[in-house]
Image 1 (cartoon, rainbow, N blue to C red):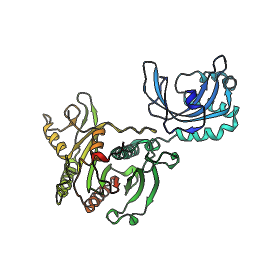
Image 2: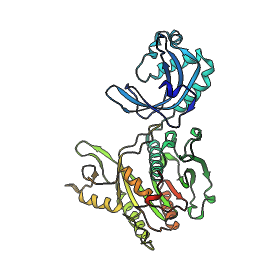
Image 3: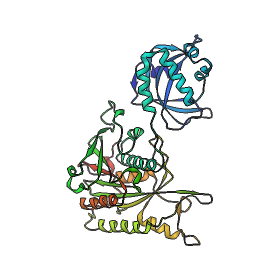
Image 4: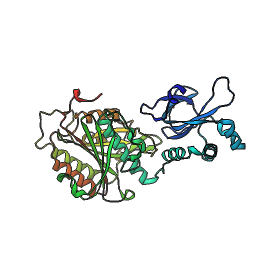
Amino acid sequence: MRDRLLPERRSLVEHPVFSGPTGDWKLRRRYLVAFLDRVEGQVVEHVVGLGISVPGNLAGTYERRFRIEEFSPIDPQIPTDRLSDLLGRYANALRVQGPLSTALGRRLIDAIREEAPHLSDLLDDLESRVSQNTPRGDIAQIIATQRDMTGLLLTAADMDREPLRDWAGFGLRADFLEEEPPERPYEDDVIRHDWRHLPGWMQVQASWTEQRFYRGKRRLSVFYANTRPLEHLTGVDLVYYNEFHGCFVCVQYKKFQHEAQAGWVYRPSQILDSELQRMKAIDEKCKVGADTTDIRLLDTATFFKLHEPMQFEPGNTDLVPGMYLSREHFELLLEKNRGGQGGRRIGYATVPRHLTNTLFAELLGQGWIGTRGASTDLVRDQIRSSLSRDRGLVFGLAEGDQRLGNGNRLR
């Protein structure tokens, strides 16, 4: 580890991974880390650097993987016996094999500040990056849904989900931007739009925010729209449109509930039937004037994602586990899985075959699912429909003149 980290201060593009003690870490959460080094033949250890690390899965019985997101060597290095003197009866903070409590961590940071005042600005920066106000309740669900939808769009576009690590809802913080190789995706800008300045077919009165991501010649614009504050939204719809192919897909999220006997299941609400009628009407419209030479494995527009409950975890870039079903498949399964009292439910136990996150993103990105030649008028109608029902909208627009196909996917 010393050979890879100590030569210079940098934000690590490759984010090396090392093994460390298991401890009671929260997976994929950011931690402020003090790096200790012991030189052979010397008794005293030294704090040689400060940085940010993200714990991952176990690497064995007694070790866990740690991803080093940032490392800053410090000069001069701080002898741990000096910190022990400052910590007094809390000197055990230097021997804990795992995360420190909030109080103990604060004492260690204060001791480092006292011993090395020139590190205060660095500590302030690192603390601000690992400390996020975690939203709760309904707002947390909305923000987590936005993040999952954006992650799906980035995956479908063959782009890294790393920008989601700083997700804060509706927009990504811009302060994580660094110099990166041009082939890697990055957030070009966060733009708040006056709806009247959007392209004509997107002019729906709402609050609009746009994110832009690039990779090679590809551009993915992700728009977030709402007509009400987050806490008053009833949900979020995902709409995707590939401009070159007229490929249109709409995904509605439904949350699983856990039942003692059945496990994770979805049971319809009272409004589901009206939602299904609306989605069926969309699929019927999409068949009119379709380009039959542009082949699809499934040429319908509407899908459901049934997902496990979302917990907003700062620093997490994973997609939420669940299953994707086309609207037609979803309806068939509901009818097939009626209980003795007429109740309907769908769960992992009753749906052995479904599209996973990875498979759905792959099919969406390569244009194997979705409409053929859908007009922008149809997309605008769906945008209006979502926003008129007090729902938020995540709209992914794939732009460029690159034809979808197996040979065009970037590796």
